[in-house]
Amino acid sequence: MPQSVLILEDDVNMQELLVETLEDHGYFSQGAGSADEAIQLARKFNFDLVVSDVRMAGTDGIDALAAIKRIRPDIRAIVITGYASLEAPARAMKVHVDDYIYKPFRLPDFLAAVRRVFQSGEERQGYQQLFSRVFSGSKKLLEMAGFSFRDTRLQALEGERDGTFQTFFVGVRSNHLKKSAALEIWDRIEELEANRQNLTGKEDMESLQRLQEAYRYACDLITAMSRSDSAGLGKARAPEQISRQDFYRFYDRIQDSSVSVEQLKVAPTLRRTDPALLNRSPEFAALNQRLWGAA
Image 1 (tube, rainbow, N blue to C red):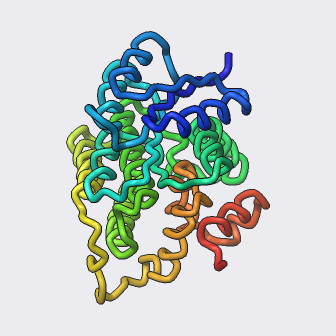
Image 2: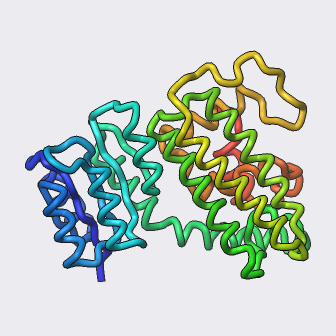
Image 3: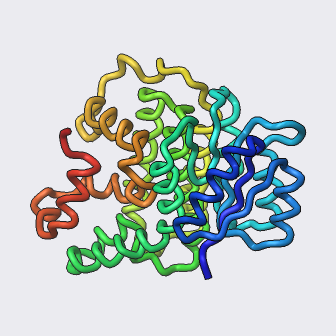
């Protein structure tokens, strides 16, 4: 059965173009011109993905996404908009959208965004297998990457972690987080990842809950931040922290679709890993270059 996509777009020409483009590439797609119509379709069909514009008469696209997610909690979501709103990205992050794309966009870029959403599970599994093969003798490194945790107590923690990375990704993609503000958040994320690396599986629930709450706080901080680009300017960087130059290059790669969410999740691990170890695998060397290498 083909993957299914609901398009919520009140511009009839744009709606028809996106529906036809998706169908030409093997997807099942239906269009809706209003939030009410999209919600009714979501009740009738179990769509895998909803793509929604923001501004429209009546209920706007983000409120429609929230309503659809209440009906279909597992549905994925992409926002498309030509409106540079200050509040829309934060609202979109709160309903856990997967990507945020500004109009005008090229159809190949739109299709690439759809593929990224659908391939995220497969991509994660691929990185899991790659980590297992290259670092088979390093249990600690596998734990750093998040691929060897089996304790059910950690499932809630991993859910908060995934949400934090997803929110950071959308924050950068939507331009809600400017570079210096994003760097401030990234420093916090890398610190959380280091704490997570040190988990042994023997922690009490209180310790795990504190780390879980720290990820949630980082996620909330992203949505609460304004588009100010003054955060953190002038502060000295600690030796273990990423340089501004390297991070800003990484930020640009997220914005131009060169980095996926799943790659974002392994980026802190790769940055802290001995290059000699990474170079054992051409795939890992290439991924590290893609994420952190000089242009």
